[in-house]
Length: 425
Ligand SMILES: Cc1cc2nc3c(=O)[nH]c(=O)nc-3n(C[C@H](O)[C@H](O)[C@H](O)COP(=O)(O)O)c2cc1C
Image 1 (cartoon, rainbow, N blue to C red):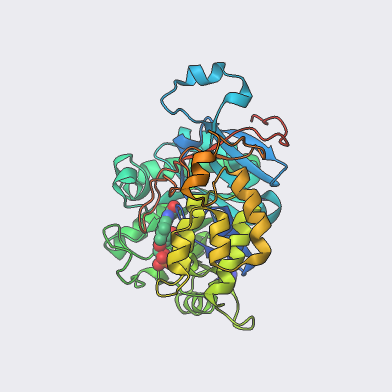
Image 2 (image 1 turned 90 degrees about the vertical axis):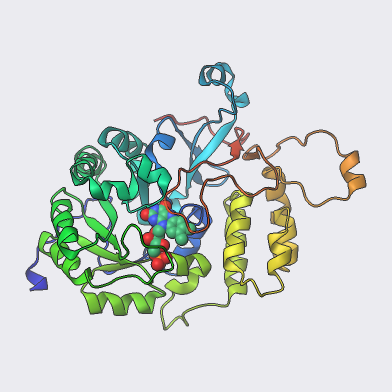
């Protein structure tokens, strides 16, 4: 029967989710270095962290030749009105980095996830990133009050008319125009009948894929995923020719493949297990999970390559290094990339760490006497990212294992000397 089932056409710049084991969208934990590492270890596709449409609208797209990235930035308000910022010469406008993509290393395999509650704002935001990604996904599963109160995330599960309108608008105004796929990520509803009714509507909107997180909205992340509805959901998707990706308590590639076979789903998505150790995407033949030391070393190198926000790197290292390991304390108490590299004995990265600390204006550990001698401010020679709050965790609103928070970063960018003028879209 499966072979007779229709397949919706995959757009030219899109990607088929069938047969794929993918990295889940994760606010805070799904930034660029995490995605690149997951791909390095064999993830077939990566979902970026949910970004709320309103935080993307108004962003400027910059090609950053220094890092070979594409950066989406917006002026940082910091209590200053927009009209005031607009009057300043560009080199004085501080910019907040909202999203960073590495086109060469990820674009063809990157799905951008939107938090939205309206078709018009969803379309406006999606158009900004459409040329740099393989697909746009709508988060319809976030249970956090921030999303729910704004009519986003899991609130959309209770308003299928609105969710379908958002997906249809994205399909016609973004998917068809930029030739990329549109998809949705949902949670299961209380009963199989309710879930079926919802999925039957969603698959008719023109989407190419649907991910189902096998937990209901009130369920906490530690509760075991419920798989009883999975076969039914996969069946509805298959009838419509839509790829069905399962999510919830998938531990590794091998586990994913066994579950895909057992439940007849097309793909599987991994979140928590990949946050801790992205080598979970490796095949059995490759030797499966690597030791945390090797993975952490690769992560630090990748974070340095793309000048990842220091607070975010430190946070991720806290997730990746087992708490009982002797490296955990010194790393989580580090104040700079140089400190981290020393704590992990990654000698080959020391020069790179110092360069990045300088570029990001992260001050290395210094004695009180040195601190007194230091002049007021160090010029931002690399001119690429300036931290508004130094050596602190980043201020994105994400909490422990939160979903779908508004992407708010404390990082500000000053125009790079080596960067080309902003490409406004
Ligand atoms: C730190 C963290 C951040 C998350 N952020 C998002 C998000 O931005 N969008 C989303 O749809 N789900 C988000 N989730 C939920 C995961 O994508 C996934 O659905 C959930 O963790 C279940 O998968 P797992 O059992 O493999 O962890 C997040 C989960 C975690 C742990």
